[in-house]
Amino acid sequence: MKENEYLDEAYFFKTDGNWLHKQAFAFSGFDEGNAYHEEYAEVPYVSYLTAGLWIIFGESIWLPRLFMIFFMLGSILMTYLVVKRLTSNEYLSLLSSFLITIMPLGIYFGRNVQPESPGLFLMLLTAYFFIRWIDFKERKNLMYSGFSFSIAWGLKYTFGIIAVPLFFIFPFREMKDKFKYHPKEFWSDVKYLFYGIVPGIITTLVYELTVTDRAKVGYLIDIFRIFSSGYWKTRWPSLISYFNDNYTMWFVWFAIFGFAFALLKYRTRFSKFLIGYVVSIFIYADLMAAKIGGHSYYQMPFLPLICILSAYFLFCLGTLLKQISGNKFAVYVPVLLIVLAVPSMQAANDRVWSTNFYGQDFIGEYLKTRLNSEERLGAATHAQDLAVCSYSKHRCGFSSTLEEFKRKEQVFNINYIYIGVSEMNKLEGKDPLWVYIKNNYKIDLIGLMELNKQLVPIHIVLKKGGTFNFNDVTNKQPQLAKTYDTKQGIVPYYYI
Image (cartoon, rainbow, N blue to C red; front, top):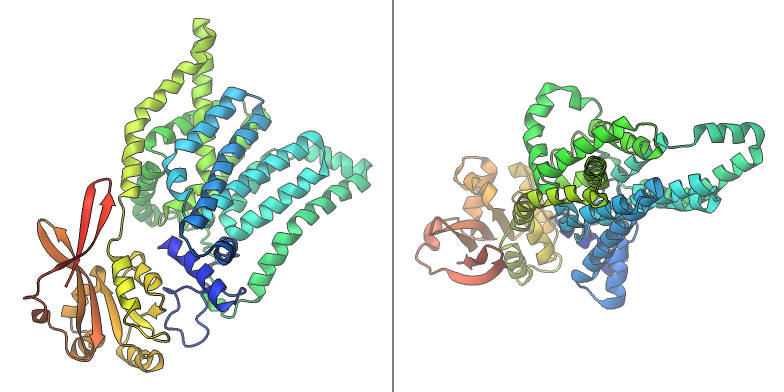
């Protein structure tokens, strides 16, 4: 669903030519104003890139996905370069980049059309050029670092968390002396940093200042919520699930042991960077309490940390073995511990890639042939089931009250309602809205899937005119709509 959101924005940029305001088929579809999708405080760089590619090469989902993969490959390279810059250790750098290559979180979201992949790349680019500025005193590196940071922040401000570990290695004493004894050089550094962040500031301000409905914007900041016991009682199971899916608990523990080794050498720049990175977790959790337990991809900014700490643990363990055995090749032996994590990593990949919401493409394409160009679609379902709106190329929404729904019927000429499995039980209730729907809409199509060797309805399309009655379709033979080729085998989807 998240990917559809950014693809929708690109579609509207390309077709409407309105590049200042985001729109999506599944959001604000029942708004009677401009129906702009202004919920998230993000500059739509990913959607701009996608729209540009579509204008040049034509619409294709794999074209923007290919660019997301390129960004993820760039993140692998940047992980190597950042660690190499911090440690000058080839083995540790290669091992860190290898781990980010095989981590489930990067494998899945590294190809999704959303800000996570380019944001991660730009975050690491920020760190790399910042460290180069410290090492070589070249102001252009500070400018590049500032530029990368500002664009990463604009993509998704969660990636701004890289500022915390960079703060831990900032050359305060050197800059203090420069300010005191060489003020021109100090202000020249500030000037170059400003040059770097200006483009990001401008694009962010343009987006912020053109928001038409400030009430829609959610900055997701939720300070101090993590300090309540009730928060962890509800969120902890989800977080553990995401740890398993994103890295596996093997690498979470490897990272914890790696952090312990970093604490033992807390005076080194590498350890300061890692300690600052770990501290940023608590700052991040405090600010993002509303989101970290709801979406696994909000852990993307910490993918390099888990990989680098895990690699450092294996490196330190190998160094101890080398000292004990006197064999120089003993340093590589702990890498074999990765083998223990392989089954868990495979299971994590299987869980993520097996999470599919079947039939939405079929239902959407079906509705696309039924709806008029200006007609909107009623859609009563959960968020992950709203890809139907994108496939139908029609704005959709729903109402919570009968009076509101009747008004939307007239304003948007509602003739079809799509109902997902999560809302089907309401058809049996006494809510006035649903009683009205049952008395004025008939079954047009039912989508079915096999459960316990029986076909059960998971989608219903209702058409205005008539009354809702399951008996209208009970005697009809289900037809195969399409099949989905998954790792678990062929999954059929049927319709009546």
